[in-house]
Image 1 (spheres, rainbow, N blue to C red):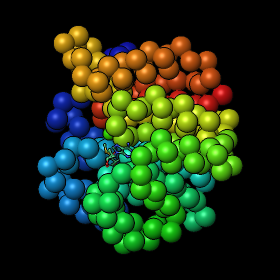
Image 2: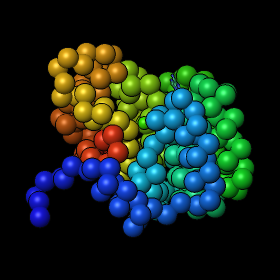
Image 3: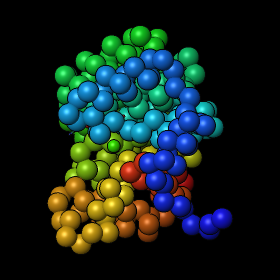
Length: 220
Ligand code: SAM
Ligand code: CA
């Protein structure tokens, strides 16, 4: 028994996956292909994907935003949880990574739900804001370059409807948030954003210790 979050050993995580992970064949194969890349750890954990999919279903989201697509696992997982008429605007700068993503989205039959925008995500979000998409998104997932998280947060918050949910990834930074020697731009940006969100009365907040830390910000 514990009244605090217990440390998740590798063995306990393996058990958790054993008794709860539900993935389609396409999701599993995308994970296996991505695992062969040197940057494979950029992909979200599958149990985190399943959690986000559950949130998307719980709130009956129809319109989603993703910042940071990589090989497409999180977008695939959210797309599978959206209704047939659902849409994700997915932002990335890499044609190479997202070429992998497109293959699996096609295979899973969700490509028509995913509007991939290649380019710096701040520009894409500003474009959406200038073209009538403010307050129209139900769900947003932020998982790209950490120094820009605050810029993504501010823009995504405007794009969400009241009651819309933002999930921000890697907010524990592998534990580096509490290591004073870690002064890289990414860790400093995440620390500053964590502190800002704590005091931000525009949102309800929970920092969920799943995977590398997933902050949930519910727009008031
Ligand atoms: N959510 C993905 C998944 O589940 O596999 C992982 C995303 S990965 C951590 C971060 C992605 O952000 C990379 O694919 C990278 O190309 C993209 N990225 C980096 N800087 C960006 C920028 N300025 N605008 C848009 N995407 C960017
Ligand atoms: Ca991530």
